[in-house]
Length: 130
Image (tube, rainbow, N blue to C red):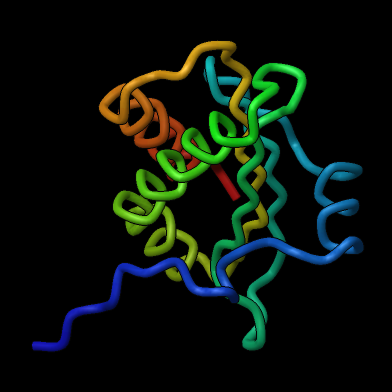
């Protein structure tokens, strides 16, 4: 039995000015405090990953880069470990999703809290109609 690697590879990260600006211009908003999610679905393409994610922590809320990096790492790890239900749902529907996760809290929260928030968002996105 072969097990899938749980790493977050380059193809699963949303990058590029065109892709990001299109997501923010045409994406739908999902608010689940302290996370704000902007997502956009499209038909699946062979060259693109099923889900591409962008993680952002605003400088307005955290002046120190070390604080922003800490929160970003926690969100990325929670996403990496819990993303499979959403990816499997999208694989079955023939769709792909671009996703921006924005942290809108002004406090540094423990990892357990971040995991709870990210899994809640993943379950909400999994249950959406595409």
